[in-house]
Length: 327
Image (tube, rainbow, N blue to C red; front, side, top):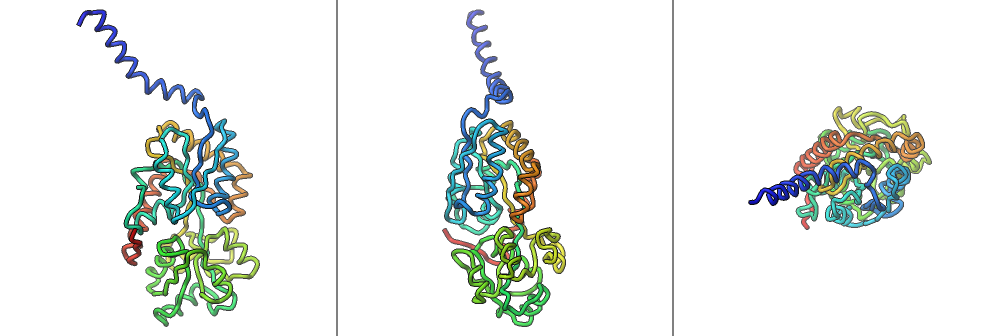
């Protein structure tokens, strides 16, 4: 190859090698984002994760200099929204607001899914812990978790409970409690919330997310027997944690942000930094606490560790209780 052509070839190779770092540098200098960011929420408007997404999205959009456009894709236990997010381009313009049941429980319960938690997504940060409250109707006999477990132990298969459906968060956290307590209750799966029937006394009890349970407990429409957090909640200080009777129990759900797996790491880092800052804003924290949630905002690495740990935990519970949904 003639010297001139050789030099031109070397210059082209050098330019190609520099291109990725130049692209990253351009983003670091504020070139990203240049357009609105799609925020996929796999639930209907008004449901807790959607409410939280809207609380976070406004200040996050201000920090990034571009609005976040919420795209509600409800249905099929979150599977529809998860598939939309998983198949979106990894260009930094898709953010996915999701929950532990979609990322950790569904993959261990459904025989087939159109997404893979670890192959298709990259974790950004955990937004909030979502405790479940074990509630019963005011006319029911159990005054405490100890009373309930004693009754269930004395009458195997006689105590019933409702849930959002097979493989739902309330279902698996109840089965984990039953396993640890050595009791067997009868599961009544609903297609929606069993709360109306619990209040009416048609089914004795259920685990319900704190966001909806707390107002009903405070208005005396339900009685709280326990909460799934490792410790008591400031919103229900008189309600014991399940762990007080069953040490090591932790059944809290959570909400968090992921992005498509191909999203560049520097964009993931920027998302993480800005969301963590938003979660530290007093007005954001107070709104989340009012909903019965515990704000988090951790590192990418810590959230990745939690994602894996949660996946493994619910795998054990699903196998131990033969919880499977054929698809």
